[in-house]
Length: 351
Image 1 (tube, rainbow, N blue to C red):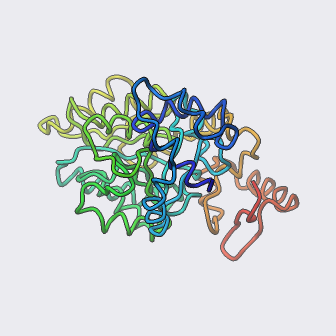
Image 2 (cartoon, rainbow, N blue to C red):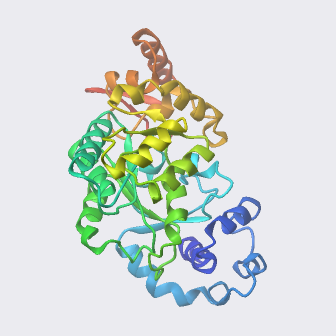
């Protein structure tokens, strides 16, 4: 059976219990068992038809493949490493766009759907600046802050990742279909753990949010009410051992109250980009502690796709100019990077 169809069949059978599939795949990666054997790991009462007759998915599979979708299973070489560290990592991800963007340094940006004009402006400006510095901006394609963050990243000529709360054939909200296409065309990616046909449901969004924070080094909360999905994402990020930042706002704005609560509870103050860059020591510890990234030279973890200029590498790595030059020279001698006009790039095909 085609490996891609096998992964789709597993995704379809286990949706919406992708974390359960992830735990199974840690012991039984795709291809190590006949697909029908995964039936015994399904929740009680779950229909196993697609595992017994995966050919039923061939039409949907072929249609989505033509649109650019592919499926990654936990344990695949290009499965995002920070996400794979989580105990509830999704078993299979559907991805459209630049898969490599999922393994680059990411910052999640979340906030209110009905954000204020200031909130939208803050999301756009922070995303534009951080994307220009080489970070991938990750959010949920929702109205409000999410959309502003994605657009800001694109305006900064950077990449952005949108994590969906429904299947790959259900872009939500529909009015963001053009934005979804722009994200892919801009070198970013659309991602979902849900099977084709899965409608965006209220209960899906907390699951979606753990992926947004799990892909990212830190989560930035722009505006949030006291009871909001953004606070759930922030709490999930903290539980995952990731940094949380919150932008303070007016005491008269109800959408500032969630951020103020986060700040009282120990979130990092975010007023300008320097507030975030000061936390790079914590980001480096997260990278160093990641089993999935353990075998890669530290400096390579700060490389993004394309040419990396020296100033951006120095900011992301926290190294002095002399230390950076020494490590780049060593990586060049090892054949891991190459010097190009404007900076350095990773050698293709190398870790």
